[in-house]
Amino acid sequence: MQAQIGWKAGPEQFAPDVLLEAAIAAEAAGFTTIDVSDHFQPWSEAGQACFTWAWLGAVAARTSRIRIGTGVTCPILRYHPSVIAQAAATIGVLAPGRSYLAVGTGEALNEYAATAAWPEYEERQQRMGEAIELIRALWTGDEVSYDGIYYQTRKAKLFTRPAQPIPLYISSMVPESASFAGRHGDGLWTVGGQEPALYQQMFQNFDEGARAVNRQPGNLPRAIELSVEYSDDLDAAIQNHLKYWAGSYVPALFDQKIYTPKLSAQNGAVVGPDTLRKKACISSKAADHIQFIQRHIDLGFTEIYLHSAAQDQVGFLQRFSQDVLPHLHLEAPVGAA
View 1 (cartoon, helix red, strand yellow):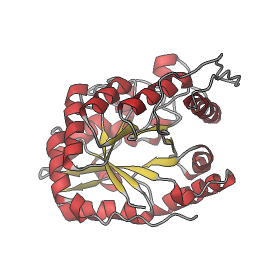
View 2 (cartoon, helix red, strand yellow):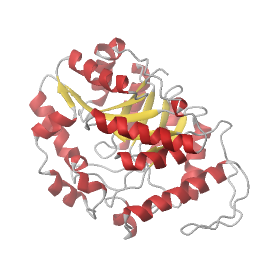
View 3 (tube, helix red, strand yellow):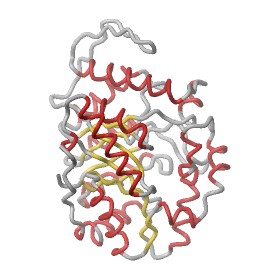
View 4 (spheres, one colour):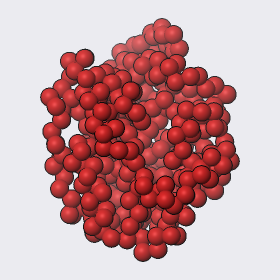
């Protein structure tokens, strides 16, 4: 399976019009895929937070080849799953054959802030299982009267649906949740900055989950977001990255009730340049970025999404595509069948 190199769009930092022009540039530069966060609030009060589904519609209309989807959306609290089923189906019609949906259990920054609800992880995962079941049922075009513990519908039906199936990825940050992704998803979604052994255990659990429902894991994509800064002024690049994204490097932000950008930034204050250098590739040398990305392809990731906080996103995309992408060996190892 050949690895795909994509761009991580960051609406937590950029206004939607600026991000749209960067999306158009990503396609022109040869990136194959875009993933975009679906957040109600940013990680810092310095940031932005547009409505991702409106933005994806604009990207669908202004591009013709690049794949687009969420990385990731939470369909269990702020949204009812039937709304996400309809939203993803609409993007699938506007971008035929090049859309996907990636889902996760969310953060309090988005879900608690918008709903005042933030159940424990076990319940959020149970909700996710129901949400995925309901989304898939609605995508068939049948009338769906669903009676779950958390969600109900009555003869709900999607009248606008794409001709081609929409791949559904599931986020996993730790190996323990990867088996759930293998049982319920069409692909695995995770983030960078961890030791190789953790990803290997994640793959093993994901594969076991897929086999448990009679699917071949070697055919299922494995996606990862990697943070990079490719700049001649690395100190400025690091400070800019931390200004908007420091909160996203604190594990507590993903499971504790930290629900405002101010609280996120306060917790993110413990993240310094040394931490970022360990979690990301911060370098002015193309060779370092080639090695960093190649290492993750060789681990078995089939989709790599590159996230930079550079203020000039178009310039970053163009320079990276010229200096780094042509030198990658994109044939990822075949997963266990």
